[in-house]
Amino acid sequence: MKISDVVRSKGDGVVTVTPDTSVGDLLALLEEHRIGAVVVSTDGGSVDGIVSERDVVRHLHSDGPGMLAGPVSAIMTSEVTTGSADDEIAALAATMTELRVRHVPIVDGDGRLAAIVSIGDIVKHRLNELQSERDQLRDYITS
Image (cartoon, rainbow, N blue to C red; front, side, top):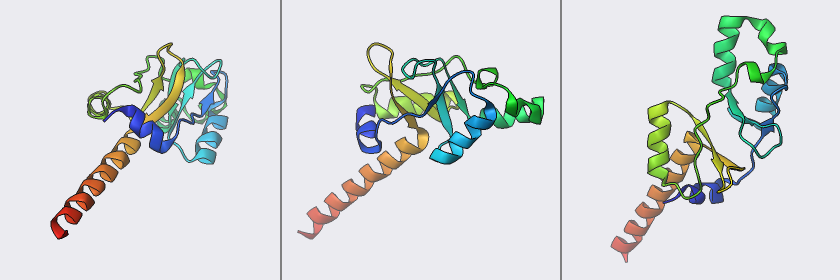
């Protein structure tokens, strides 16, 4: 199975912020959309960075509450691991586990932002696959 299958079922919507967005505004956006990370992009299509709840907590601890007024560029991860729609689900899940990242932007052939996948999206997709396989086996046995 490919990442395109996950994106097809969850949707390709991606919430982005610009590097100069305040961390406080970022937190409001995360709450509004009930998500754990956003892509940082100057134009809505490039991947300049990624910032998550985890980044906020780490910097809040080390820098204090004043960092909430600062820009997300000060706390974002600039070296972003990305994936493509053609990646195997298991391979991307392994990469996410190895690198200890929970969100991976999915880019198209030109490197433009196409979607974002979380480890939760991958787990949900796999559970749905297992449920479908179980139902098919049950139907086969009982018929």
